[in-house]
Image 1 (cartoon, helix red, strand yellow):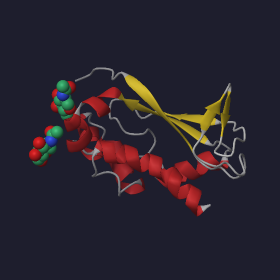
Image 2 (tube, protein in one colour):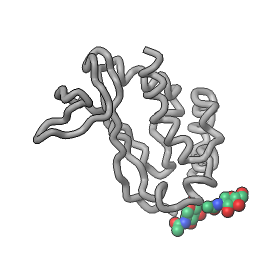
Image 3 (cartoon, rainbow, N blue to C red):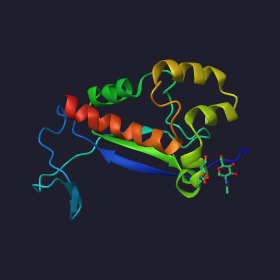
Image 4 (cartoon, protein in one colour):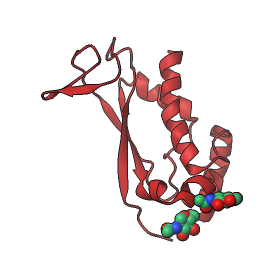
Length: 147
Ligand SMILES: *[C@@H]1O[C@H](CO)[C@@H](O)[C@H](O)[C@H]1NC(C)=O
Ligand SMILES: *[C@@H]1O[C@H](CO)[C@@H](O)[C@H](O)[C@H]1NC(C)=O
């Protein structure tokens, strides 16, 4: 049970109006540059958000609501997130679909985190680990539309 999950990263970029005003999706590459749909060069400013540690849940969500974290990242001028994920989340369907955030924390005895998570992210605590992962990425889409 106490293994270290091999992990990978999921990069996603989002519209941060203060850094890249008119970024048009999708992004692609042109020679050595990253460009948007209109061929305009795009500079990515990425932040790392670990989600591959043993509970397989993005870190910090027992301390802050996911939307507040997303908003803070945008306010700090980042336009890209490197969200790490455990390989087990993609290879073990039982882990991904049949284990909730609460159950995962329970299995590691993380009682304080359950209390904090319940307070800060009540809509995420009883959904599956894969759905929780998706919610973190969706927080940025919501922020794009909302700002
Ligand atoms: C998940 O649980 C349901 C019932 O709770 C079961 O039918 C299903 O086979 C399980 N899926 C996996 C991948 O373990
Ligand atoms: C998949 O995840 C479940 C739930 O955490 C675990 O019980 C099972 O041992 C895992 N299977 C493999 C092959 O690691």
